[in-house]
Length: 144
Image (cartoon, rainbow, N blue to C red; front, side, top):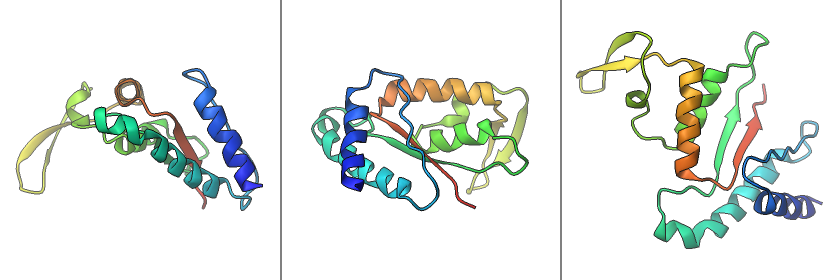
């Protein structure tokens, strides 16, 4: 059954127009995360030919959607997690700060760190997805 689900999901990802949302839903313990891991393997294998000529492209992005602490989903946290998974370089330099906060890196050097809004993070995420061109963004819900 998992093999059939994997084949159907791979076909849905490969044949879907850009921007399509494909959802896999089900109760806890039915194999959604196992299915995601198998999909990651297939997408990685399918991407090998273009990774040699286009190393900036990613076969997929997998991110965990953290459960909300207070009942409201934290989009800012979700965008940041996704950007990290996209290996977006120099994230803080790409965000226009509302206000500037000074921080120190591991060597003690001071740098300017913007406190990005959800809208700014979403804009950077959209740009990163356009440049990295993953075949799929796989979002797995967090278990508590």
